Length: 353
View 1 (cartoon, one colour):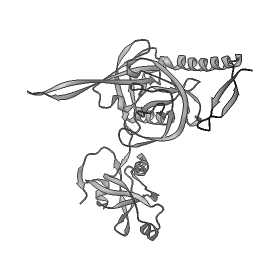
View 2: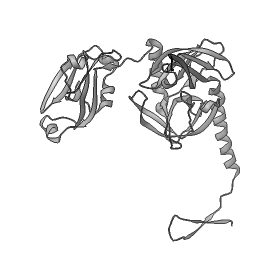
View 3: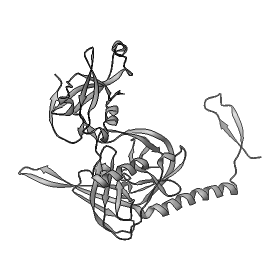
View 4: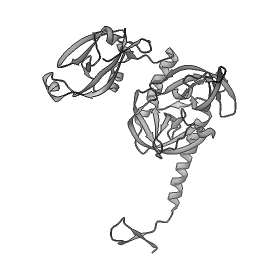
């Protein structure tokens, strides 16, 4: 019998006798099955994956005058309808002056930005081209930890690069570059690099179950994708309206802890809230009576434990409708009425005194 000697950590160098493992025909069949699954998924989705190139024109200060400077960038994306709609990341195309798309067969087209949502880091662009192959959006809600996934993209300009791995975790939270928190993020160890952004994360059936969006440096094998269920909702809204409508009340704040005595005295459901440190003049909060140094603890009866809770509660349905906001002002609890507006209206800042 063939044996090998292994030593267990630092436990006195005690020899352990184990039986050597010999490859079997069944092992080869399993490896072939794995390879076939990856190849089949790539064959199905590969023609839908595109390379996205962007140009941003910036003003560059010279000795004599401002000179325009072109900044090149890009990422990945994938076609999800036969009439040319493409999903990618918002941070890939945001504020781009020119967007072009290269298909897997080498064809190149100018693309139009249909909609862009920095809050979820999702964007939709479109090309006018014949004979397009659309990828199928799968059900990210059915993902299981350990499930095989494949990433396809253009890292560092190496076009249509394929990597594979597993779903490392589901239900993660990731802060988008806009500052908003995205929930239900997929964590994977399928290798991603700059240039993979916007490319598809695919299951073994060739269904897109995520949009690759971020990595953690210098860690290895910690990569994140926006789930397809979020992408479906956001893409539909972007195609319909060109944007995602979100409520806005016009404050800047910071997360704070409320003193236990105040929590007990006012029978609050939580010991946390949002301290108002700045406010925009003429904003819903300003006209509703909120002042700097107020601590917001509830919105329409729902606890507000931090800025992220405020973002989640200020949905499209809140826009234009009265909402009750509960604040702590000193030791007093007040309930004020505000009417959230659609986010994006500029106004004047009123700093805390």
